[in-house]
Image (cartoon, rainbow, N blue to C red; front, side):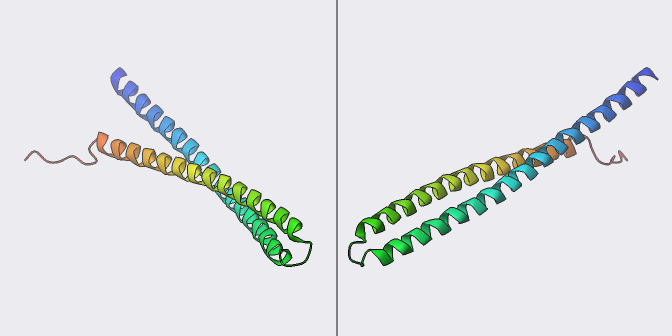
Amino acid sequence: MFWLVLSVFLFLFGCSASARFSSEKEKRLRAIDEEIEWLEEKQRGYEAKALRHEMLADRLQFRSGQYVIAKQHWEIAEKYRGLSREVAEKIARLKKEKQELLQKTAAKKMTQNHAFPTRLTSIF
């Protein structure tokens, strides 16, 4: 009787720990998705600002006496493009982290599913 109660307790404890662990992973996955979305918006903003300054520089370069100002706008555009590249790298790292987390979750589910037989086969 003692062993039966102990085995039931361990089984239930294992299930609750597993559920808690997957809940933490789900929270982390949601947080990664939200951060990726926010960074993608930020990246689009940097690209838009870079394009605006680049177009302004392209227009100003042919006006007399405006070449220096045009050069400043090209430099500003390049700074925004650099920021956009940094954000793209962060996005790539987060996507890689998300993929690794999903693979670990899938691998854990596979081992959990195959740890115990799901049905008993007949010996007969």
